[in-house]
Length: 211
Image (tube, rainbow, N blue to C red; front, top):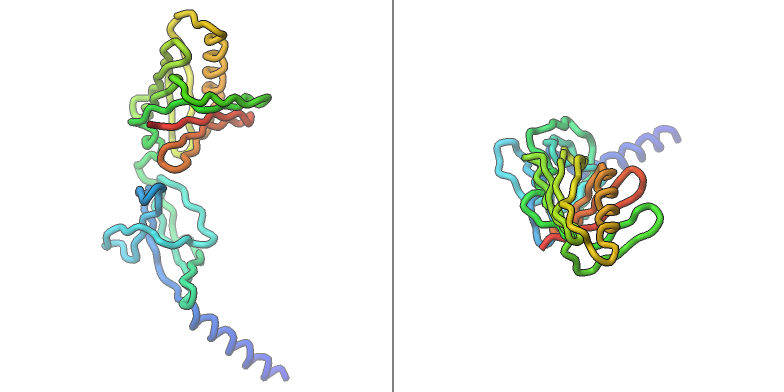
């Protein structure tokens, strides 16, 4: 009986191995645009050119700014890929936060921890320049400027100040809320190519769209 069980186990193991193929995969340190979103860049050999990934690697959590070498298994019937092992994860000089540059981010909604506010069409916007370490923009009726520091998925704003034009209809109050939320921001999230969400550790957030 034990011998039959062992034979059955070996047969099952050989069958599983035959269905899957283990290979090496390299992952680039940044996404690349694809359709309306962003995709991983992959290659099978280090000397090969980068290609756009067409499948998801189950069990693999990617972080921009790092190059990876993976061992993966591919199901020969379904094409499903699974992570076997991360051989290495190397930080590069690429800073993902620089992708926030070159956009005018218009404020669409915000949540301060107590209530949310949707703004619809608005002239309130910010420009983020991580390379120069600055943030600028416009509130309800005043110009905004300050300091920006971004690395990876982290971002922080400080020394925020407006010009001193008096707004109507509680505009100055709105500008104060905006600067308060910006000053507690600590991470950001890109959704697609045109949406930016700034988060704080306190649970507040701000939603922006670029045009």
